[in-house]
Length: 232
Image (cartoon, rainbow, N blue to C red; front, side, top):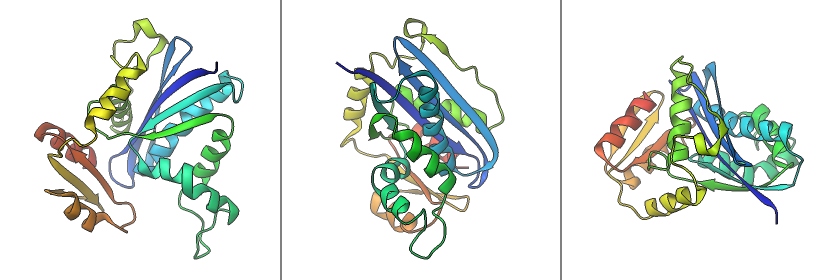
């Protein structure tokens, strides 16, 4: 039976572009390793990609290819849709868009695509700020680095990890609980301007087709305030 590895990743930027950070948690072989870093000038999407790249790069250095099943959890639909759908057309077209210009973030997509070939990966989109412990911790790491801080990163035995994300099945249950849960509000950000919406239809109308747009669903007033702070 092939062994399972679980990964959580997240990215954040203070401005789009602006200072940014990424975070990742790798759960492997009775061990947990947290990863993170920052860039002075970047975007939220680049940090989301970098979080996934950092985790797969780490595993590539420590494990034999294709000997484990990986489940990678991220709240970035950009990452999951890109690596499971769009990337194949991009590669076929030599990483060019229909207008002949390079695919946005081409350098990172090439890295992620190359690394992903080394593993059997189940890419999973999870809701952000919805109580999934792994995602919340990655967000904490990413935003800390984006703010210029240097958070302590854990590297050790699962039993010594203080965050309650294990057994990983607990995270899966938490993810299921958010499905169908009534949203408190929807938050969007375009060119640094943040707005709160009472419905997804209103939020979608603002962000659809807008390059660099960010949006998230909140489930409470405090959750809404946290997302607004992140976006600003």
